[in-house]
Length: 430
Image (cartoon, rainbow, N blue to C red; front, side, top):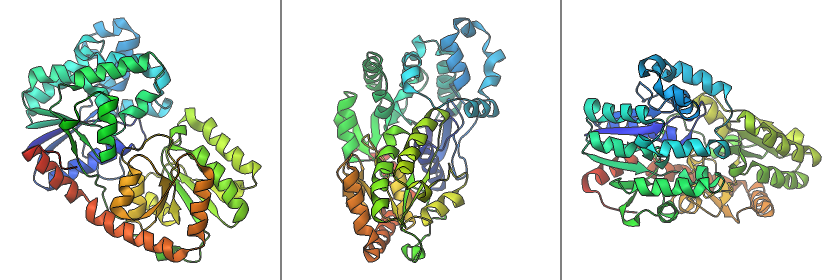
């Protein structure tokens, strides 16, 4: 079976969706499938062997200039295609701010217009490449925000086309009205043409089907899978070290670092030996947000216990981060559809304390590796940390249980088996 996965680059950062798609592609390839992982917008960035192919479609620079400069659309495509080169897009990504939904709303609407929008040439190229050159058996879009290419693809490709929904609402919720509703309506209309939709949790199946007005009966659940290579930490390794709370996610308000800082300031007052380590991508736009969190800690006398390590550039350094903590907490403000960082922490024997919403409820059911607390409640976080601080045996038990269950239920082979079953039988088994 030849599967084409159309993914979206993370503009230079480690993106959870990119990493999932890359692991998925590699696991399917190892299982005997032919897989084409096609990046759009920018190159993907992962901490394992990159499975994506070249060229990059819908290159971010040309997409933006097509939208901003109408005359750009009239320049022969051959003269501007060089801007889609991976090295050019990497440089541009390193110089740009985080993709801000507030300023990119109109551009998103233009992209959703597909063959009728300013990026029609790029949409046409993608459709022709997939339909005329690749000729796969199945095509899978990595998110609904690139659905503008679907209608044109249908003209070139007569096989099945699916869409993986794994956080599209986070971007859409940041759009100002009326742009937000226009974008939702555009996605809803065009996404009806998919043969089905993949999600990673029961929660998100119900939530996103209602959010985008898509038929729930056409949703299929695929388990998450992470590359377990190198994730070998044991809870006992932390014996004798200062109790350390970890956060590993993008530094942004929706991920809840400000709530974490508020809670840690209270926790540190009770337990001044405790430490807080934070890792994850930080855009220039979100530096003031991080600075605000640091000021909160300084005012509480806890700044000396805080460390921001940046975004670890390698798998080994990321694993070392997880091994350096006792518990993971990423108190998201949005309803998390995946939670890969929870699985990574558990893979290293580190339990979690997460808000009782989104996919975290199902992750706890499946792994037994943590605690859930009321969302947006700093005191609830503190109380859960205090319990684990005083009970090393429970921490280690949760870590061991979670580690075993992650390796059994969230390995790439489980993900592949479920994928091939769905593509063969096409039935919901969530």
